[in-house]
Amino acid sequence: MTNPNESDSEGRSMTVERQAADGPGAGGGEKGGAGSGESRPAVRRGVFFLVIGPSGVGKNTLITKVLRKHPDIRYLVTVTTRPRRPGEREGDPYHFVTRQEFDQKIARGDLIEWKQIHSGEYYGCPRQPVDDGLAAGVDLMKDIDVLGAQDVLAAYPADVVPVFVATSSMADLEKRIRGRSHAPEAEVQERLARARMEMEHQDRFKYLLYNDDLAVSAEQLARIVAEERVAREAGGTGSKSNGPTSKV
Ligand code: ADP
View 1: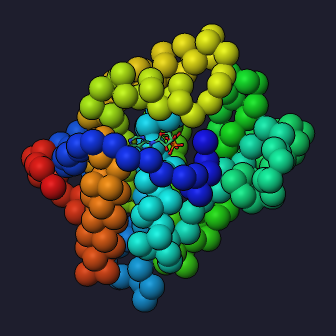
View 2: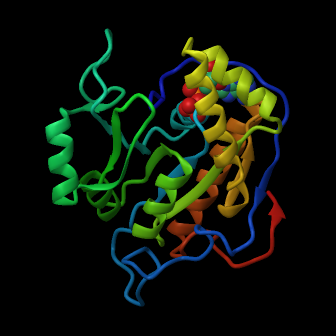
View 3: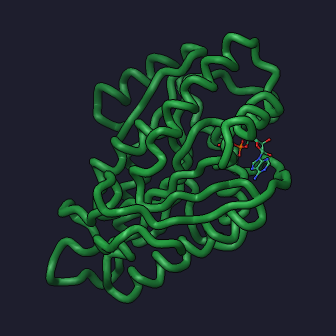
C-alpha cells in the first residue's frame, strides 16, 4: 500500500484537470504556510504533495516514478500496527509499531490522521516529520486516502498540494485491485465499495489525474510538482489561484 518501490506496469490514456476552487485544497489557508505573512522567511517552507485516491489506483507506482525525477522530495512514511512481512524493514515501507505504541501516538497527538482498516490494523500519518520537513523547506510526498487527505488539508491548508488519482473506468480499477492481491472475495468487495466511495470525491481536490496511461500520468504528476515548486520559489503559494477549472 505504501511502498513506492513497487514495480510499474503500463496503461492507456489520461488527462489532468485543475479543479475549481471550492474543494478542500482550493484555497491557500492561513496556518503558517508559505504565503501566510508579509515577511517572507529566508527559507521557503516545504510543499506537501498529497497523492490521493483509492487503494489500487496506482498512487505508489506514480510516486516511485516521480521521486526518480525529483529525488530531493522526501517520501513520508506511514506508521502502522500491521506486522512486518519478510523482506520489509523498519521505515521501509512503513514505520512498524505495536498497538500500544500506536495508541500512545494517538493520545499524544503525534498523528495528523489515522484509521483502522478492514484487517483490523491501524495506519497513520506522523506529525513530526511533516512539521520538521516543511519548516526546513523540504518538500514532502505521501499517498493517502480521501478521508485522511481531508484531515491533512485541514491541518496544513497552505502547505498541501492535493492530487487525486483516478481511473477512467471502475473496471480498470477493479482489475488492478484484483491483479495485485489474492485477498478473499469479501475483502475485494469491501475494497471496491470503498473505492467507489472515494472516487465520488474526485472533483473536490485541486488536481485530478487519470492514471490510465502510466507513462503519461507520471509525466503529468512530475509536471504538477515542478510547477508548484517553481511557483513557491517565486515567493507565491503555488498555483492555488481561485481560477476556473482548466486543463493542464
Ligand atoms: P496504490 O498505491 O494506489 O494502492 P499501486 O501503485 O500499488 O496502487 O498500484 C496498484 C496496481 O496497479 C499495481 O499492480 C500497479 O503496477 C498497477 N498500476 C498502476 N498504474 C497503472 C496503470 N496506469 N495502468 C495499469 N496498471 C497500473
